[in-house]
Length: 116
Image (cartoon, rainbow, N blue to C red; front, side):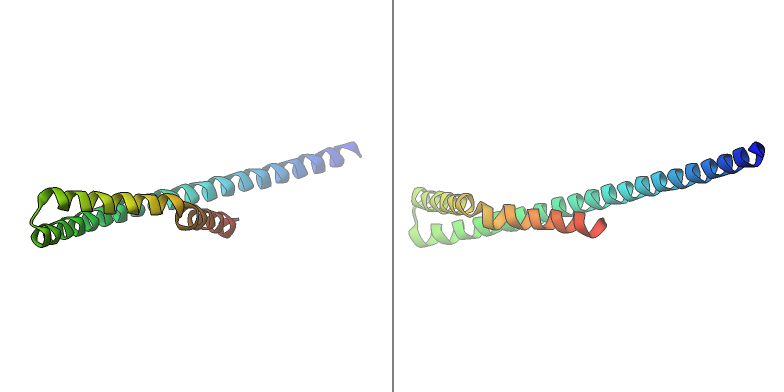
């Protein structure tokens, strides 16, 4: 009588072990997919940031050229450009929560909640 019971326990243990191994493999695959997705988004953001930096640099140069022609004074042009950049930096600093922190935290939360 004990022999069939031991066999049944052994079979059940084998089934449980197989199920646990499959769950572990699924979790590994999900983690690998998330890491790949984050890596892809990071690479995409780096490329977009490079293009944005080039566009902003070109725009800054064009504004500088137009200001130089309008004022005909290089020092005043550089001063105006620096003042504009300081104003932009201060604006980004004071609005960093609304412009940077909240959108990125919502994006991260959405990414995590979609995958779970």
